Length: 186
Picture (cartoon, rainbow, N blue to C red):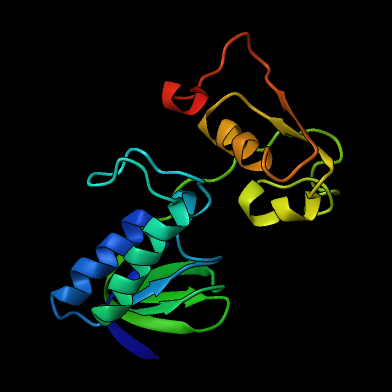
């Protein structure tokens, strides 16, 4: 088993930031992400609440985090899921779907998860018409009619993103008012 001073599970903004600090501090650092690095900002069209930038493309912001983590010596493993973390003989053992690693410390930076509708057919049609990431799957629906369900920040960001791709975007909201930040609504 390979040893790292610090293993970070989750490569969103918090995980990438922790990796930058750990690696800059001279610690052997491994960052593990079950999908692609970036978390929510990676799928945001614009990030307008990050210090130092009035407005920046989410993917551009995350690319800079990623580059800085790599430049400082962080090892990054994407498409690898952390399944278990436990103590053994004074170390932490991190088990993934690919391997096992030893660590002096483990940081869990798992981030947010999409809210599921819990309706009939949702799981059956997952990735076959039902998606939780417009920025990941949206281009498959170019010039088609799409519906986005929700009234919060994620739903409005997805609808805005899809408005440049789809023929029509229908926003389906369960409540009388939108819950998103006013900056997103415009």
